[in-house]
Length: 390
Image (cartoon, rainbow, N blue to C red; front, side, top):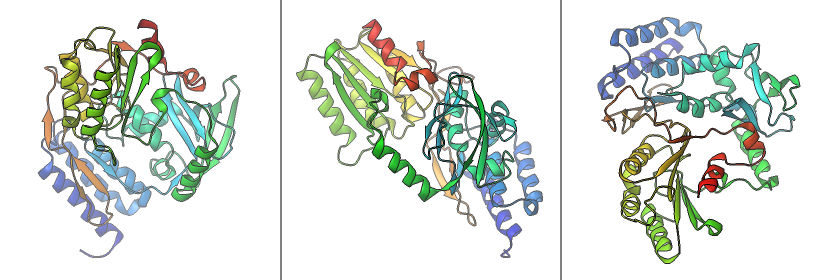
């Protein structure tokens, strides 16, 4: 194929179309084939009117139209605004200000001249998700990426983002934030970590570890944070489970909390031995002795583990609705587009955990959503609830 802008993107688009149709286990479960092909052909017609960032967004739009959270496209992003966003119960807030703009804990009202609600609706068209919880998890990363905002026509300058913000006293101001490249952002994050001395709740500690535990001696409770269904260098899941079981057997543990809030999945079978142990540990497998915490990032294999505990123990499930859909496509594989190199994940297997395919999420027994006030006060409302009932 000729080495031209149009030819390169046509090659990628055709490759994307053909490989998804061939390799996805049920590509047209949520979208009709005719509609999908129309999106593909329309994009091919528009190539010469689009730039590189536009193409990132438009390819994302095609993949997102499939309606499968496991089928997604990943592309390089170079420029970011130096903040962290979080979608709380009471709106989208800036939870970290990495460059001294004095906007931490401010609520986002607008980006450019567009209300945040409209911005979120626009981004829904290019994010792969199956429920609101997973969208909330994903969208905060897109809000930082100026190339994505630019490609989605939400800003007109890739080097900065203008936001209308509201502080905690209700004062409204407009702030223009300069974008940093990836290396500058990494340095800003590193410097921020070095000066941070605030003690955070258990759930926000040890973010560099895939799994860890802490004994809360005051109420004889073992808190286990399971952040990923993957092996951690230096300590395998099997070793961690063996050590944890030994700790439980050798200490007076009355209650067990397993926190899946930040677990996006991996291999569900890794945690099976611990689930089997808990099932048959009568001292722990009781109402108000066993607690499972879930949230927007509880997804894929982590959700399989949660359902195994839900169906076979007396655990009380607390937190937010899961980002994972109970009956869903998964077991992903990947391919790269030949010209751009963008990585595309696709599903190869259907998982059916419940009878009703229309159920979008696993709802907890007790719904507790974090607010900006919880965050500011370093309060974990889920753990506070558990402490009140034990």
